[in-house]
Length: 58
Image (tube, rainbow, N blue to C red; front, side, top):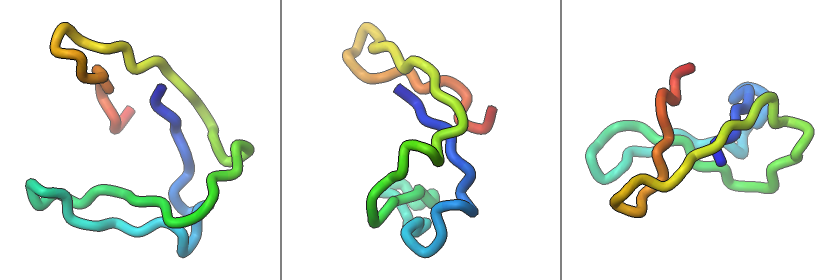
């Protein structure tokens, strides 16, 4: 499942940190209030067993 959130609503609990590849990746350090979720969509597993996230900028 992919959740869409407004990053500004997460405040200081949201930190952008480098991933192993060097790109910035969001990490949430605190509870997620379900009311902050603005949309959801499925992330089915591919043949390799990994979730297919699709376009995350959409």
